[in-house]
Length: 151
Image 1 (cartoon, one colour):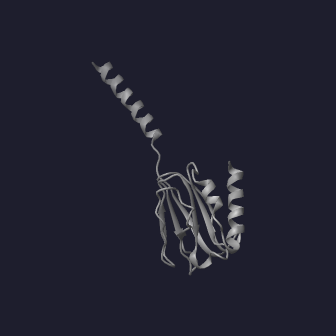
Image 2: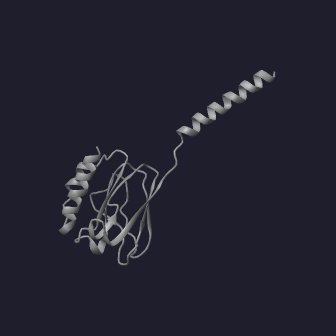
Image 3: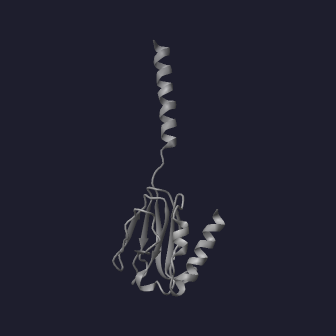
């Protein structure tokens, strides 16, 4: 009887270990909103964010005058547009796979944009085809190039 109990406990431990190793925790990724960063003036840092479904992206207004807004045409299907208030932290919980285009409303023309990639970027062609304005056009070109280099 003791051997059966020991074997049952051992089997249960192996089973639990196997189940727990397949369980993954959602991550919280922090993005700073800066007047000046490594890539120049008016930037999100980082501006290319790689995430998994279930992760949270926390945008922190390190400097005043910034917000977070989705860019029309640069969201996965079924994801609703969003816009935060100025000078407030904003948490974007990502569930749908794809590309999420992000801008700071007051500084969009100055190139303050970011790209969140969640899992398989199913909407990449649509996101890349969105017409950008001002310096945002060049910044997105750099971000898409950087993303391509990771593939």
